[in-house]
Amino acid sequence: TLVTTNLVGIDMMLPVWILRCSPYALLLMLVTSCGIGLGSSHLRAADANDVDAMPTFKLANNMTVPMIGLGGCSGVRYNAVKSAIDLGYQFIDTAQAHSWGYHEGEVGQAMHEAKRRYQDNNDDFVFVQTKIHPQDLGYHSTKKAIQLSLDRLQVTSLDSVLIHKPRCWGDICSHEPEGTWEDSW
Image (cartoon, rainbow, N blue to C red):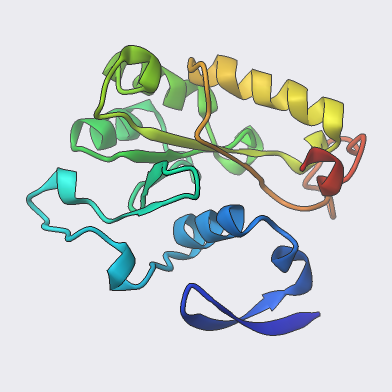
């Protein structure tokens, strides 16, 4: 079922299930997955030559989230991630789904070598987002999956964890999840 809504000033048709998501997770999904931006009043001025002026938005907890980043699917590997970080990218998106072209371990290696995370005492940190595979839905499975991502990414915390897909269908999962996306939430 689709409903019309006005989210971040944009009229759009969305499936009902997505409207049940946290508004911040939904906004982050739209920004990173669909390239939808916020109104100019919410952005810092951006100059192509000034990485510090990259467009951002703030979450309710005052965390600043870059709106431009590197998506880690389709076989994006260590060299691409390292180059993006060296060029000033401040947002890296990855996922646990190796069979879909994601390589969390290689993203982690590039992040570790760049020393651009909070634990590195670096104010110029890279925002890291990953996604839980639908076969890992359920409370206990999601906790284990998050720990696996922390280990692979070689970080002590994640800035954003999304549910990649709300359920298994077709052959996207090698096994049935222990629970639902609501259990993971």
